[in-house]
Length: 403
Length: 234
Ligand SMILES: Nc1ncnc2c1ncn2[C@@H]1O[C@H](COP(=O)(O)OP(=O)(O)OP(=O)(O)O)[C@@H](O)[C@H]1O
Ligand SMILES: [Mg+2]
Figure 1 (cartoon, each protein chain N blue to C red):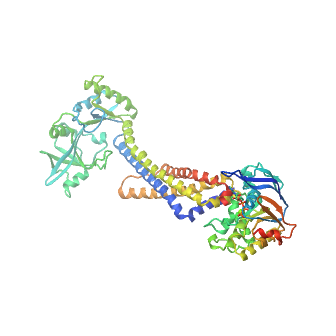
Figure 2: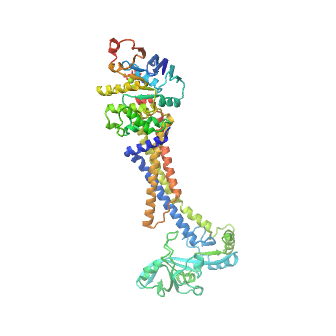
Figure 3: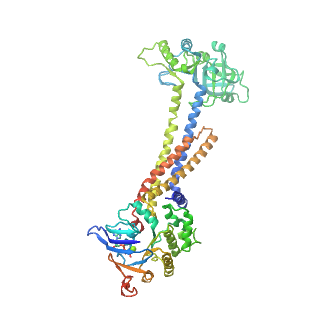
């Protein structure tokens, strides 16, 4: 058999029957385009999240969060058992600890400066925030240990928050009000953008954790804190120790659930990639539905085409085509159309992903893997859709076909 | 070229017994012969042609083509024989629409290992006098020209045997005559030709005429075809 002639013939059929080809192609183009686009979005989101996680949560840190088993606000009120003293104790008792910092937060506070008011979260941190949480100031200074000890009325503010409150004015040295408490701005926080929970980290203020507890919230507990170890290999052992020490400090019986969560880097990465399952698996599966529909449409168009081409099939058999060769030819025709459509779809998907990414700023990452997945899906659709029509064509009796 | 003996063919019918279409056919055709098959409609001419052309099976009898017995050959082997040894010409031309003359002529070469398919197709088209119409679509050709393209398609694998089932049936008289000249030329080149026709004048151009009546074959070559028996053929 002359494969070159056969492929040329298939490509010719595709070009000469433009309407038919269009209807066969459109479903695959849509399916592969959306597959490539959505995977670009999923991979982009995952990489961005991992970047943020790795930037803010280095591999030798452990987070300790108040609450049993889940983070964030709880319906039965905040857990009040986590104290600054717990972190001091952990620093002394856990092997390999080099730094620790407790933190508290107070969301949705009205911050006033002269006539301007802006609602944002107030965070309480220790003086070593830059070393512990990887965030320092871009202007001015962070607060000091002394200021934390004395619960000073000082604050460091995010860039967006500062722009909104002060406009053209220079914020450093100015006084803002939180409730009745005046705070003096010492510095502007380094830019950090949107975090993995969707919060704008440039639209918040930091105060000494003591100031937040005593002067603003009137509580004696913290929300969370972080332990920094001297070596990433110590993380698992340290997590064990933290568990034991904390249960003891909080006098928990063996049967009681913990009132704290120990988050190791491995655990956080797990949580992030689980959150990404929607983007990486379920959305591309929706593209799969489009491809399934495409397969059904193609199979039907080809079945009709086989009926129209009965005399052609008869002629081909009369001039020496074997059944298997007719089968191969019809399969080739659908695969040529589906693969070409897949290439188009992948191309459009790349352009759409890159275009959307640069216009919207959403991180989009097109990988070779996503493109291969799209093309493989297109070929599979072609083979599956072409199977039945090809079988029908090859099974025709030439005598009847030529009558 | 062809030796047939005791060939029978029947089609099952729903309420009666099977319909005997070919009854104990016996015919020998030697290399380079030009044979016309005549007979009334429904007598079994096309059925015989399909069996000669290895497109249809028989129930009984022996068929030897080019010295090779074809009964019991696999369908793949039969397809190969059709490709190499036989060229078909049909009443309805059966050219592929939206496919140029040269592309139509190349079709048999898809299923052969012959090299230079393009050149072979051009040569075949030149042989039938259509060297200047190679890029034309069937829709742009006259009936006579379309049938010439079909003949070029039958010739492109250089087969020894040409089978034509009423090749002039869809053509006007003048085009039919032209086509008969072409068949004559092919026969002069040494090809064996078996042609079904309804037209007694066309049948007379063959060296030999056989007649099928109700599935039975008889030779007319030794009688003068212009007389009595040709009368009821048409
Ligand atoms: N596939 C089939 N099933 C049943 N009967 C068939 C089939 N093919 C042909 N026949 C019958 O066999 C008989 C011979 O048919 P055939 O086509 O060989 O005739 P023919 O001599 O070529 O006629 P015409 O001159 O009209 O073309 C007819 O009665 C036809 O109805
Ligand atoms: Mg007939």
